[in-house]
Image (tube, rainbow, N blue to C red; front, side, top):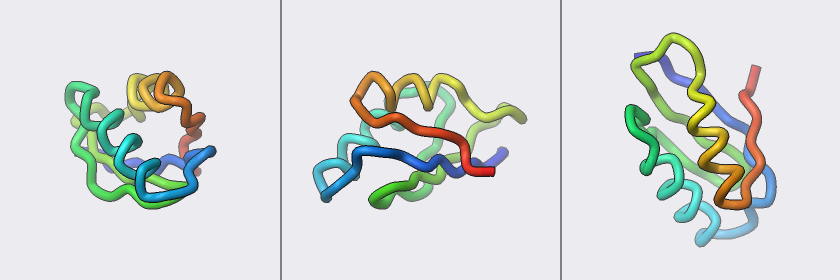
Length: 68
């Protein structure tokens, strides 16, 4: 499994961490490793980062980008 880190905007509190965790967990094939304010780490069996994870976060109100 490949691991990726996302930088996430609009996170301010523990409730944001919970919502981001739930949004990532709702994406098939994503294994959430760690979520903290401003970032999330996850694993996916795909070699490429999951655009579905970024889309799920955007839908939840948290714009995200892949950390390089």
